[in-house]
Image (cartoon, rainbow, N blue to C red; front, top):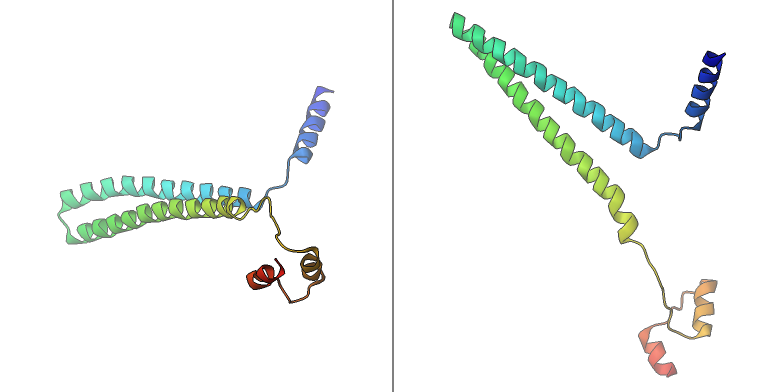
Length: 136
């Protein structure tokens, strides 16, 4: 009986979860890519240690070549990680920035009611500073 109640509660909780937004998907993708890069860097570090031991023990030129290539790959993976962080910061900055910067409050129209009606009707004769000076 308790198992059925637990299962019902679990089903209710999963149905009440909010749908994933595009921002949530971006964050999830960022975390996945970041974790993958961390895993690659960690595995590469372990491989570098073993390759250094093999190259030192055998003194074979091929092992040193593979070691150099692996080091280059590790450097590129670290650069990718840093560029990923920079990209996500830019995405977050772009998502936060425009909504607050382009907000207009307390608009004030200075002109006559006739000019306002003309603007609302969509006429192209917009009031200019010269027209305002002539009417005063």
